[in-house]
Image 1 (cartoon, rainbow, N blue to C red):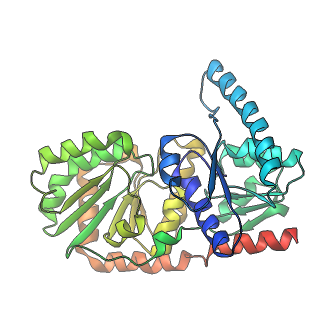
Image 2: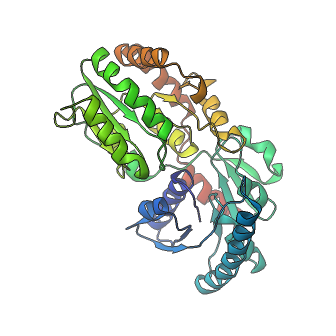
Image 3: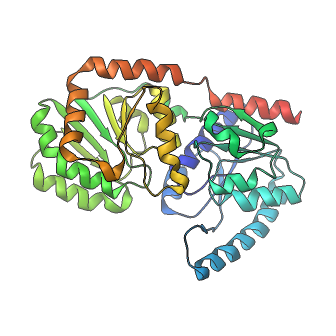
Length: 354
């Protein structure tokens, strides 16, 4: 189970794909958000939904409502587990993981969890007491969990992302992502900078994922400031990009949040990036994620509140106009690339429980 954002869902999907290729049966539990349904639609495994909410930073009334939903989800999880009788429960994070792991514990089903971020989410820290094994993506996560349970695995990446895809343009590609939910601040930044970028980089091709809720505003904004560029194919705007392998193939440089799944994809595909961590992430975990790449000279990072437009434009143009700088980032990304985390997680889980 995984919920909340693509950052939790995508690694779970990658593990599910590997299990299906081995002839195993997979059941996937998520929440009921629109983005969760979009990401999981038409997947080749059974999916179930639980209605859960977060607790952090909410009013007392909202916390009480969330607790009520959590209790109801626990009893629904008991029924689901009794029906499908899983061999193992794998938690990928998000509040939806909590009732399922606890219900599994009550029924004697063994469980593991996988933490994608350098600083773990609260749900996984809570569940670490109840699971048998914990797989982490970064060594920085180890101190947050019972050390005897922890192994470093890396973050699984979906097969469709790793498949080679054709590049459809002859120029310099810039891909802008705000995570699966989008990022209004990054959208605003690009709307300000885009005319300057197209002026400074004569063969620029810009691909921008806005998020579902901000798509129309951003699209209309681009039409106003860059008339004709969409028709010419040099500017493409999407609410959500389902074929991320294709999107990455168009990019020489990526501007992105620093969610763990996105970083895993950048590492696996060796895509140089400018990272803008979400400043309100719990415990600043996105900034800690980004720092792992920055300290290995495999990405650049700008804190959102410190971005100066002129400096940011200069950084993008210098990277895209100086291929040797991008090559150096790619070489360092190659040093971080783990070998098939989803296989490691499955094999170690089988070994532990055999």
